[in-house]
Image (cartoon, rainbow, N blue to C red; front, top):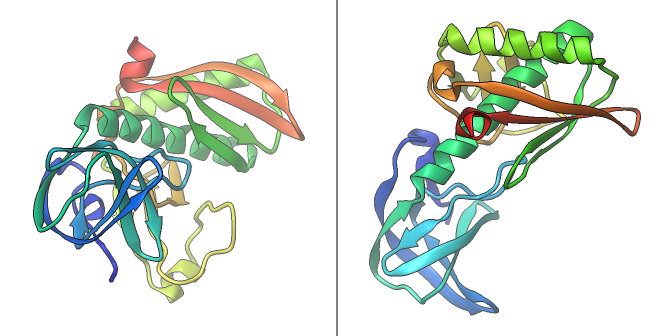
Length: 230
């Protein structure tokens, strides 16, 4: 049974109730499958949500054949209440949304592809297919922040195969089936499974910390939102 993904219906929902469909003991905890969940599973470069289900802590979340599997610190059964760690979720939404804008602007200005993306506990890294100098980096940072301050709405869509065939979107690989497109009007259009802010003003701030040669291009280290302010 496919888990209903509440985080796609409303990425700002933090609490929910669900029915436990399966609970299996594993090394390090119990794997719990629910009929519906707000917990985002690790994927697309974005770490998973954490939080609680009943009295158990949720320490890891991943997707397996359409089911959201929650690694919990205690067994669960029946109907349970869940709550995600909203501070963590919003931080990840800020980081991921800011990365889209920076990657999209670089692609539009220089034609470089984002060939790698990692959201670490402290910083975000973007691997690009071409080189940038310090002046280019500062110019991109200025443009990204100016775009945030326009407070543009973020659009999420599931285009048909016909619509997708003519849509100029970024993607690291060829995609088939249902494809989720996240659009930052005037900055980026990209296939993405992550959670994002509703409006770009919520990202607050983008800081590009460093740029160093990496393989055939460069690796940019960046921070957004609360991390950038700190």
